[in-house]
Length: 418
Image (cartoon, rainbow, N blue to C red; front, side, top):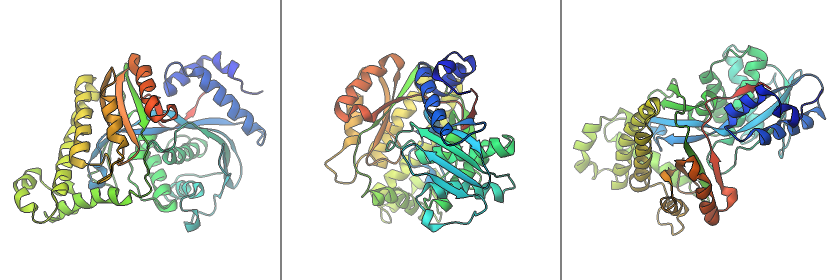
């Protein structure tokens, strides 16, 4: 017996699941998506199969604070990678539409440097973490498809990692592995087996679901708290404004280096260890040791951590006005103090242009740079009834393919009940 879109749209459980994961008005699109993936999978694999989902993520507040043991708010969103999965012996095979097939022997959990930058490394790393921490592992074959858009800073790689982690959790560990443990497994896959140094932000947001408050005072055991998104009428639109990230490594690195240079003046490695009042009392002498820009970036850091805490409380209490106020303040600080909205001296400034245009469009309540900055993405908040006009206006400048209306998803990586 197959799975058809028609049957799914008549299935109350699927309709409820679709609304939970993707929001209103998405059931037809998702039903066709699940049907198509099922048919692709069944061409190669027989036997029972199960479906899994792992989302993308956004940064809500806390711009460039994590690398100095700061605080962040991030959230799981209503785009995802889905998998149709069948058990098999001895290996994991993942066929992702549009990508080469991934094959990993589950008995070989050593780091393969030739897999740096490849999906095989991500899979092997998740397996290794589970094995090292006493969890069960096993083989499976998965066919996957994703609408987690690339190039907009919503973490397609972390979505893939958490998909693998959740499949192993459900199929071989009775679903008992905690969200933070799954995030740590995914993080190990990316940092040690994929060769990309990263924090735990992306993985935590996708694993936990909803809005994640993360305090990185301890990077080994960060404090993580889930907050359900309370604003039903507040819509979110991501716009990829363009720009080339290829030559921006130095710009990104300078933020961390300058913050740490300020910390060093206080005999600390990270700004989190510096007392704010001591910092302000020493600014006159600091100017002889570090640049003014480094001092401004430190000011951003201290204030951004406070904004994260205020925004967290606003989310918990359903205070939209206060939440919006913090997002706007964060955006202004990133632009003027952190200075990560365009490369130093650049004439091309797509992010400031996108922010400036957004502020001219009816209904926009808040807008700020999204993620690392210097090129790429902005995030805007508005009432749902103003979304289409905003999308239309931004599409005129940046292209329809680069403007994405999303919703916060209150469910982390999960098995999909059909």
